Length: 480
Image (tube, rainbow, N blue to C red):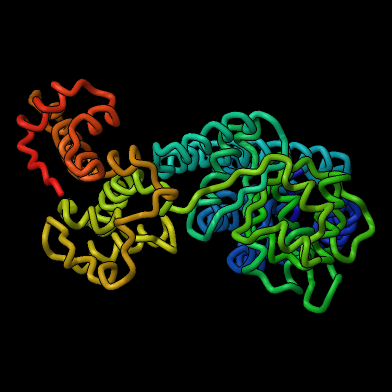
């Protein structure tokens, strides 16, 4: 049930006592107010799932409270109590947005039934809201994942294979490669769409707080713990939890994560009850976990539990052919966010961006584009707008093992045609082929020291064809 915190407002102390005792016995956190003004102050300062209020109270009536409380908290559900079972009261309460109406005196079973109905209604409402948000997020995630390189195609295929199952996925990749985006894509393409996606960065939360963040805590579990806290695993029930930077998790907590994966249950700090959770786990790390296992910094049994389906995100420097598309996307988004006229990169600027090693990966590229959009007043960005990059190590002459010839040619073509919406009919094929043929024949002739018979043999073409190409392409033969 989705209800946790209930506010009871009634000027009769006996009624407050009876309701609080009964509701706390059911496990709810209950807070009490003796009049409408006090109840409204409490609603202003804290959030509640449900308010049960008497119509007649000194200072502010229950109906006045209803109006003002719903202005402050539109999602607050209010049940009105009254000793006067008149049609006028019932109609007025419902017109003002009360969820239900109880006539005093009443049996506690009536309250139980209403709270159960309220809980179901809130569950449905939460699920509808969550589904709407997740559909929106799914669109954003799919829009944000850019790249058609072979490496990204493999990632897409893996997402498609694992999304429908509940297998645990371990995403590994350098910082800035988009691990959380991929985790969300797995969730949004799974049968758990419409259920929670809960992310937690294990490196960003202090050690002494991480356990309570993950598993929750009972009231009084430690100093300052005045109410029950729901942990991330409970929040993700029936959905997906994303454990980012799991390589930084302390060893003792790793053992508890292993138990969750094995038993599908958690125990809140300070509690003794085992709570069943149905959660799909996706973990991520920028570290080499096997190395940490060898150094006894990460549990071997947990590693194999997490590494059911490994998914590796390659760094941006190993998929440079995706850079032009990423640049175009980030330019469009940055200009829209900052409400400035559209900007484009010149061919020289794009070539510089494609040549950079990008140690911070896609995140660094995005921030670089944002910075250039902010600082440049021109619609066309040039290499001068990326001075910081030109001062760093450029890798335009990438090692052969980093990029294939095909990838280099494709990246160059993307640079040449960047910003062209529609390619017109013309001689592109012949022009591109000519530019590839000329250096190929020239290079082979150099290697054979101008020996045309040997060159034709290496290229696999007829000698007469070679001679014709040499003439057409204007190639000068250098002989030793």
